[in-house]
Image 1 (cartoon, rainbow, N blue to C red):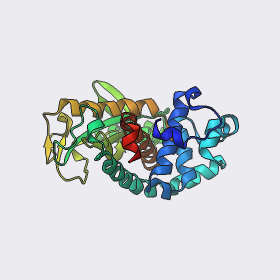
Image 2 (cartoon, rainbow, N blue to C red):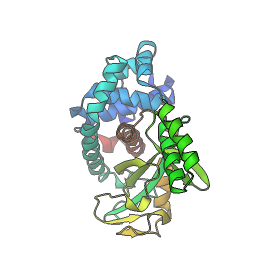
Image 3 (spheres, one colour):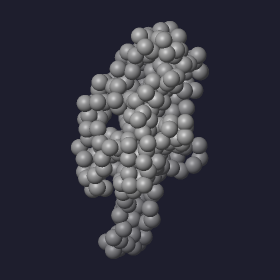
Length: 306
């Protein structure tokens, strides 16, 4: 029997659950068995996990609690939308530190299961090697707003178009629309994006250790991960110290896999960079847990018992 099923005492047999509900079962196993995660505010983290798995809002968490028996089993209790949002803001810094400790905890557990890691994993073959990459996550950029008018006004002043600048200043003074999401524009492969950029550092065991969220126009080679060793990167990071641009193609492919995972679970959860970073950390927690439980599913029960 897979170990996380032993911790499931829900109202629906495991074999009849949907893939989303099975994800909650695995996450419940991680929250219960982890020494690091069990010390956190359990309810806030569980509510954020439901938001990510169902790609829903704070308000929808309570709706699912009232209508879905498995979600109710996973949450245990439910607060109001305002209470979840308020507590999530103070939870961000605490969870970032706990995430790093939890990854080290998983690395220690995987060190005893090296025979069951994916064939592309490099665990035990290299020393202090990381794969680093960036991904753009989009948010709605809205209509004409004060920020856009201000930039056009400054541009027309530099170009000497004083009449146009005067008209733009008048529009700026009358404009009341402000952009809700605090992202930024950038261009990649001849396409414009508005939102944020997520930087990750992944280990040879395919677990994410570091995350940094910046505005979309942030240059790749200015990211700063305080990780000793070498980083496997692409051409966008040229100029960064301690990086390799070649080698380990199979290792790099797993970085792209997280990009697909992130895109699958992403929706505009937050309007600013700080809260966006919190939800990216939650997505990374679900990703790390999925990688770890996939390894556990290949381990014989006799070895797990020891």
